[in-house]
Amino acid sequence: MRLMVFGLLVALFMAGMGPAGAAPSASIDAFYGNYEGRSISADGEGLSKRDLGVEISPLDRGFRLTWTTVKHRAGGSDQRKSYTIDFRATRRDGVYASEMRTSKFGSRVPLDPMKGEPFVWVRLHGQTLTVYALHIDDNGVYEMKVYDRTLTDAGLDLKFNRYRDGVKLRSITGTLVRTAR
Image (cartoon, rainbow, N blue to C red; front, side, top):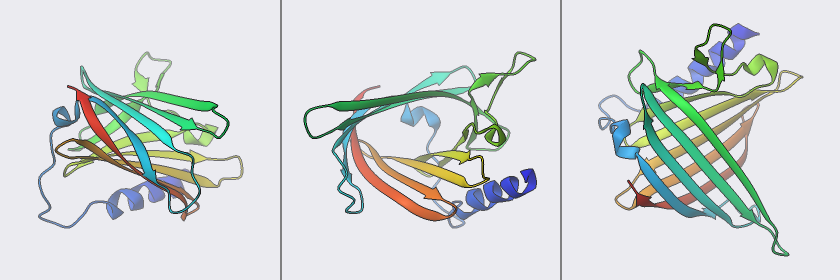
């Protein structure tokens, strides 16, 4: 099973590599700042409007990514979700590992998808910072969430896709304006 998960991760990584000779990647420093915006589409799913917030800040060996989504529902109630994950640079150029828990030896490490926890990593390619979040349920079915955040002159363009066993379930796009560096 672990080999199958590893193969899936390699295939997903390689599929997004892009053509040879693509534009050089931006430095992670170019992404540092605070961003605010709204979702603007969801493939005609009747999605409620969402306010979006993203903060990307430097850490010793990487960066911290915080994002917040506020869903505005009919009747005036709001649902707020926030996530904060630290990422450290790996030996692979433009690839960052999540540091979501402390191991028994005191080092920060990713969570374990075989325990139902999300396995999260980042890839910086061109002007896009992509966050991958892999979840494996109790039946071995995987779900992958992919957040592409692309630098623009004004801030970030967001493209979010969610897949289950290779089938796209949801797609959301949004635009965020840089509010602070």
